[in-house]
Image 1 (spheres, rainbow, N blue to C red):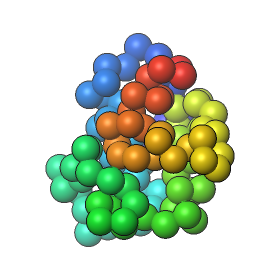
Image 2 (cartoon, rainbow, N blue to C red):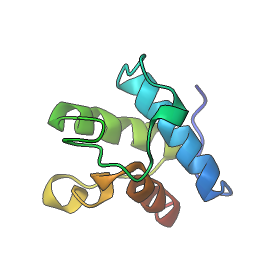
Image 3 (cartoon, helix red, strand yellow):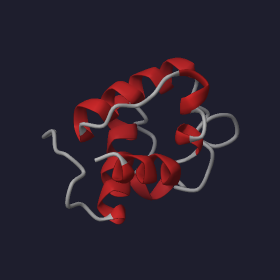
Image 4 (cartoon, helix red, strand yellow):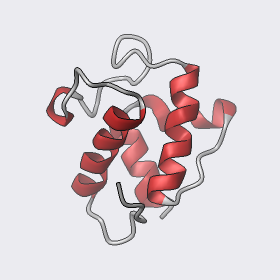
Length: 93
């Protein structure tokens, strides 16, 4: 997969790419982008991700979108859903 900045990408394009990154980086082979509800929580009842998944996802976002993701409590609202991640990526590109 090519590394690209989110500059010039629409929110829909960022969301679509983010879903692909989630599936690829977190080995969610049983999911397709359509299966991922962009408003659903990433942790707990939503995708059921854990803290190791968050770390892996943060590194993938930095690599794929060129956006630095904060750590700890500051990252919680960013990782709430695909929508919140997309908004963060667009705002910080």
